[in-house]
Image 1 (spheres, chains in turn green, purple):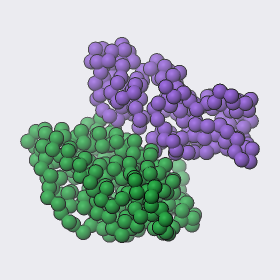
Image 2: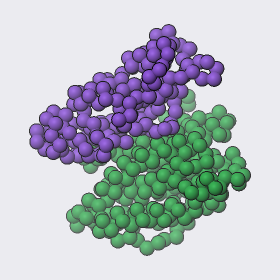
Image 3: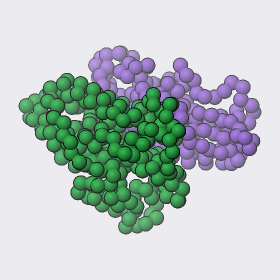
Image 4: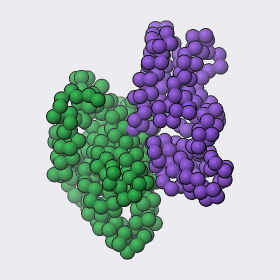
Length: 262
Length: 162
């Protein structure tokens, strides 16, 4: 991140740093929980294990990020408090992450689009001025490379597979593409984080994500859908109905039995 | 090959702590200890003079991380090292390059292959053939992938290159 070293003079508030971390943390957490729903339901044993392992990595990243947000907030909230005792409007995940699993094609398309975003974002965040975030990014980027290899590999197999697999993956791509604009369009907070040397330079992620995703779509013999500007604002706390249902399941135990431990 | 972070010139107390740490087995692959896995990064005195053990997780989501930290704490306490502090650090991120040579040999003897250098550079732990194929990028734990030997048909776990 070339801008990080030069930037850094702009003021950044504690609230802004937390808000930015929650976007990253909640995207990982919600995506991890979605994949966790497939445990025991994967199409084959290998894919079941793979999706479960990716889910674990994502939840692990979310824990590190939420713990960091809690430390910066300094009000005694740890990663569990942030994961289990916030409601949907307080979640800052990208809308793409909360979309349902549907069939295996939709799960793979969602994961692939998200993996590409996480990979490029964490790669760039390894140079963040928020040092603890840079440390997490160094770790996460290695894991995301593995996730991408898995999801991109499957995208190619499904896209360049049978008539049915191609039809299903094309349909999923068409349905989920509208959520990608939110990942790639910086809002005021993203832009401010870039100026402060914390987040990636505006436009950088779109450029790299687009190159990465376009290449894999071509290999998978899939048509890239036209750009859709769709005003999703998951990262500002405005969510689709799916997040509430996901949280109901994820938060049931700690909400019903507060303070319960293993 | 990067060896474990154990320094040559460690003094008596530090050497003792390294030995104690070598008695802590990985909970999921008990043939190797946590020093051989490269999880222990440093044993060093802080500014206050107290010794600190620095450990790092393999994968962010590895469920063994907490079990490992707990068993290190218990082992230190039982070995007269209750004053030694335990810290978890993320930087630099864990790498399979930190696996020691003895750790590699033990894993291979146990039937777990270890990727050499690049992903996919794997030899069958049973017949040493390089005619192997990846069945799944993800195996029974986050750090392993699943392979099969095309020569002897042995299915086996492989420690991933990260």
